[in-house]
Length: 360
Image (tube, rainbow, N blue to C red; front, side):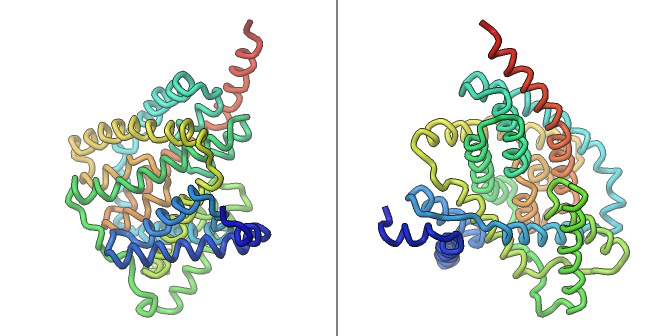
């Protein structure tokens, strides 16, 4: 479609990323100009989705995207103050709902993908599980699932939730998306900026070395949390860094649609869309239960049970001024349950598929 220019761009990954960043920047400027909410997130997301569907040779942020996740990890860790830790016991009853929530998702999601869309057991399980996109695709691949279908289903889940969550927050709960996301870099002491940068790098690499899941985000979060609780750091990463993280999250989600075919749209993307509708019902139920029990505010409860990625919900929690510790603990619990159950599920589904093949 893009002729000679398209061929020239495809010859080198750096050119593809350059095109992607330029398109994302144009989307950001356009959304900023019309005063659309969260322009640094939705601008790149919308522009990259349109470009991907138009056949443009876009490419994800790669290692840069992982660096951006370290920023969010430090932001979460820096929010873990002694006051937040003191509230952990109050969160226990709410956190105990998370295993029930994940079980309900599995009981609904696996039959949905298996019976309605005829995916194999491994693909059905990992398509249903509300973990991170990269984690679910990786585990699905190891279990023998359809990698492309998993990528598109989870990308669709993330994109739809990120698109409708701000509407629910503002129109349904009366929340504002204009809360300060952080102090400008020039107002933060230089030594604290250096410490946060060191926490991002060291936390990531140590977590990666020991094989911790979600290392680019979880490692910096743990280390920054320790530094915050020991009174070493007193700020979150600067506003400019949080905006950069939004920008690259938008790119990652939008570029996930590169190379999508009409067949994949009719099957995988549509399956992801309808599954999100089912998930939304569960989210409403568990949000209402949490509110009725008086455990959390409506905004905190909704963000805690929204089945999107940890990074995406962290961004939304920051921009609406939600209780970041409460939201993140629930998402960490959900991801932990999904990740730890993955190897067991992989074995079960391999056995199940072998039995299906042996059946007459």
